[in-house]
Image (cartoon, rainbow, N blue to C red):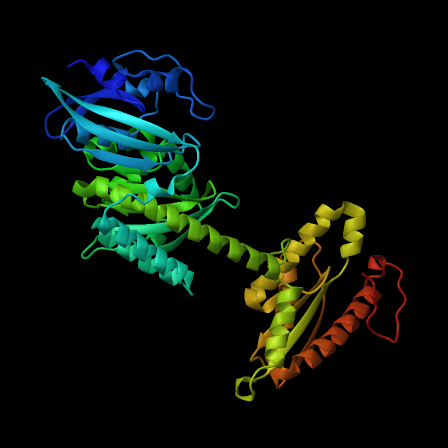
Length: 481
C-alpha cells in the first residue's frame, strides 16, 4: 500500500502509524511511518507552544522520538491498527496549551505482525464546544446528570460524594475518589470516595497524611504531559513502575490492578485528582471519553467552590494567626443577641491582651512580634475550640464560649496562663465575664474588657520595664500597648 499517497490526499495533519502486534493482546514498537506536509511541518516548523521533542522528522521512527511516551496515544493506535476500530478523541494534553481533535482510522495493510492505522490531527488553541460534546447518548446523559447535580447543589461536598458514586458505577470500579491538592500548603484532602461491594481496598484516610502530598505531587510526572493516565493491564503498570516506582509499589500493595487518573483543573490551575481503581478495562476508551468531559465540568465547579471557600476564609479568618477575625466575631455576637428565647443559655467571654508586644517589636522587629502573635493563637488553641477564638484587634484576642458557667470560665483563664509557659516570652492580660442569657453577650464583652485592663495594670506594676510610659486613666483601661 502506498502510504505516502494516502496521507498526501488528506487535508488535515495526517500520518500513518505502525503497531507491532505481540501475543496476549500486547504490543511492541509504535512508529510514525510517514506523514503529509502539514504533519511534518507540525514537527519541523511547530506553532508556538506546540514544540515536540525533535524538530527533525525521520520516517519510520518510534513516536517517542517526538512525544513523551503516552499510554493514551498507544491505546488508540493499538485499537485502530490491531483491532481495526475507528476512534475519535478530543483532548487537552498538559504538555501543550492546545486542544487536539484526533481521529484514528484502521488500514487494511497488515504485514505479518505489523498493523497500520491512519492518524489525523487538528490543533485548536481554544476548546471547541462542539467537539467536546460529540459523544454518545449514553455518555452525554451521564455527563449531563453530573452537571445538573453540581450546578444545583446546596451542599457541594455532599453532592460531590453522590457524583463520585455515579462515576464508580460508570467505570464499574472497585474504588473511586476525588481529592484536592493544595500546592501552597502542600496538603491533600479527600472530598469523596466510593467503593464497590466486597472490596478489600481501604479508605484513603488510611493513606493521606502529611507525607502523602509528595506522592500526589509525583502524579504530574507520571501522567507525563498527557491529559490523564489510563493503566489497563500489567504492560501499562510497568510504565507506572518505571516512571514512579514508589507509587507503583503503593498501588500494587493495596491491590490495584489498573487505574485511571485524571487531574482536576480550573483555568489551568491544578486543584486535585479523580481516579478509579480496578475499573472495567474493556471499556477504557468509553470511560476515557466520558471522564474527559466529566472532569472538565467537575474541575470548573470545584474551582468555583474552592474560590468561594477561599473568599469565606479571607472574610472570616485572621491571615497571620489563623483564628477567626473581628468580622467573624461581630457576626457571632449579632447572632447571639438575636437568638430566640428558647435558644438562649449562659455565655462566657474572655479577653486576652498580649503583654509586651510593642517592646518585642521595638527590640527584635516585626517578625518577632508576628511570631509572638502566632504563639499566642497556638496557646489559646490549646485551651479552646477554634470556633471560640477571635483576634479582636492588633494584640487582643477574645474568646466567646456558649453554655459555660462562671467557675468553668475562671478555670479556663488559669489554663491559658499555664499554656503561656509553653512559649517564649508569652504573657496575656486576661479578663473574663459570664452572663446567664447569651443575648446579653455585649455586656459580658464590656465587663471582660474592664477585667482584662485591670489585670494588665497589675502586670505592669509588677513589670515596670515593659511599660511604654502611659498613665493610668480612671484606674482601668490603661493603654500600655
